[in-house]
Length: 115
Length: 113
Image (tube, rainbow over all chains, first blue to last red; front, side):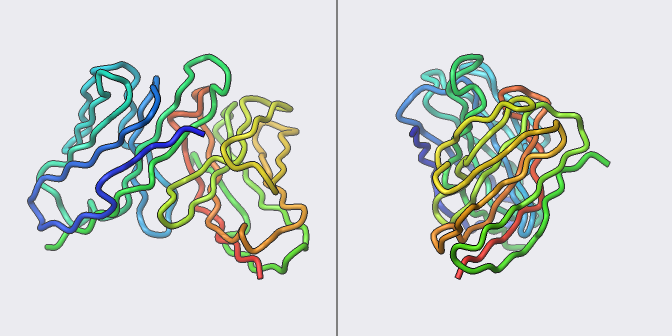
């Protein structure tokens, strides 16, 4: 199946620093998503991107859908302790076509924020 | 409150003993899906369903079955569990037929010994 490579695998930062993580794919995706998972919980959607080149913000979070459709990045500005968790990218390859409901997730980025 | 409810939250079982993990959503979503989460591998999709009586394989369907007899429920069935199915399982539902903007359950941690 399709694969997403997410990097970095983990990050240790100081409170107040900005964070950047990205995902790349060997094939084209029509939708890119970013989720956050808190310990002991299921993932929660942060940002959804539906159009190549799209740049979307949600508070201190900004994500972009790469022009090539094969990558996406997530930035977190001025990190705070509650940003701690695992961040996942996810992609959907076929908008309205076969395997429409099939989602592929990256391996996750574990974020630790030191106060 | 809008939610996806999985049961049980924790389960330890023995190899070969059939088990079912239930999933129920109260948002009238058409789309439901099951994932397993393993360290270093992220979430991998097992099966998904875009409507009642319609199910499709995800990336790792081997060893699992699902059914969608009614909109709100999407049980995951392991007919003959094996130790390599020890994992953290998540059910999700979405108003979006492509399953993109999904609500996830709290997870079921399964151990097969």
